[in-house]
Figure (tube, rainbow, N blue to C red):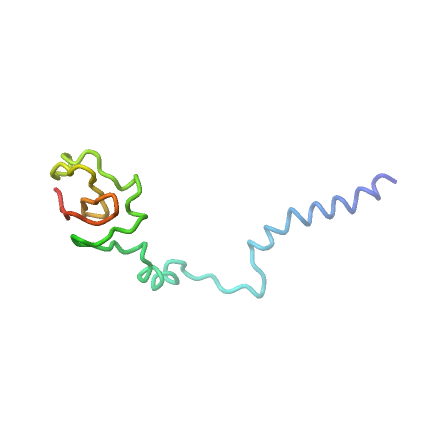
Amino acid sequence: MKTKKAMPVLLLAASVLAAPFAMAQGGARSKPMTDPMAASAPAAQNSPYMQVQQWKKGDRLPTEFRDRQYVIDDYKQYNLPAPRKGTRWVGIGAEYYLVAPNGVIQQVGSGS
């Protein structure tokens, strides 16, 4: 009697556990597998995150590049002059920008 009651529960549990595996295998309706890099290559070329933009003196550096992770504390290591009071060096790609608190670029340096 207990076996008859447990059977639907076991079948339900088995189907719930098997569903992700069935979806991962794909069905007759799924698209053929292609090279993911080939499909995303044109999109990656147009992505602003894949390209390093360069700014010039007087431009306003976007907020996301003023985050702590871009700040250069040891400017001497990069052969950069000491930052003026209230400014800080920010490194993006191979370029270094002396940035004021409002985000305006005061100086562009290439360092070494």
